[in-house]
Image (cartoon, rainbow, N blue to C red; front, side):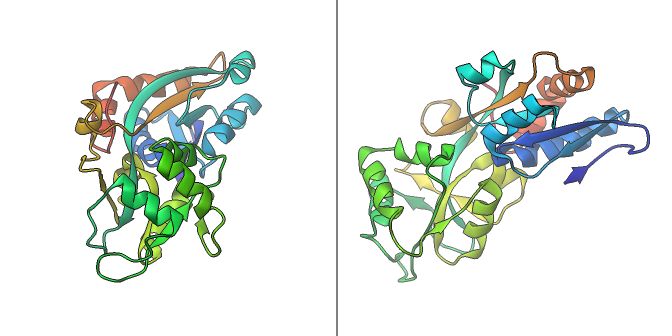
Length: 256
């Protein structure tokens, strides 16, 4: 957990949800609480988007961050969403590697087990996410070939499955030759030793994605109950302020 502010007097806001947003929320929380010492921001370990929404509905946290919009059932239960930023969805590799770019065809071959080594002869290790995960669905949507190859990868013995965004980043940093999905916001805000790869010659930057040149990105949302607290409303207003927007854009995101 990450704590900011004056613990003895401050009102606490717990924030949880998608791991893609947690690093940025920590940075925002530090700056917000420095200006608002009556409110303390606590980010909880990754719950995933669905887990964050459930936690808000249960009253366990005051604010969820998600990488998907709420569904109709969640809306009926009283949740409210607002998109606050977007970030490139990327394929990442350790900065120890010399690889800087990959094609969708090469990705399909890697997932299918047709390509087992990098150019220097070192082994390729894929890092997968659970089939129900948003990242897995985004990988499938890149191309029909990758969708089919991913189904093959999920049956291969010894393939690494990472439960959440932070676990995946840890595995990508520590497993030699590992490659897998991540988000630029996580890599930058958490100062990860990971490189976001060019995909089909396209740069995975916020500027490129905002211009439509890089077509893969995550939408990031705040989700609250029907009547968020005044403290939560103040934090959301800060995120939308010039100071908050600067933190987001300095950490792999853009404002739609």
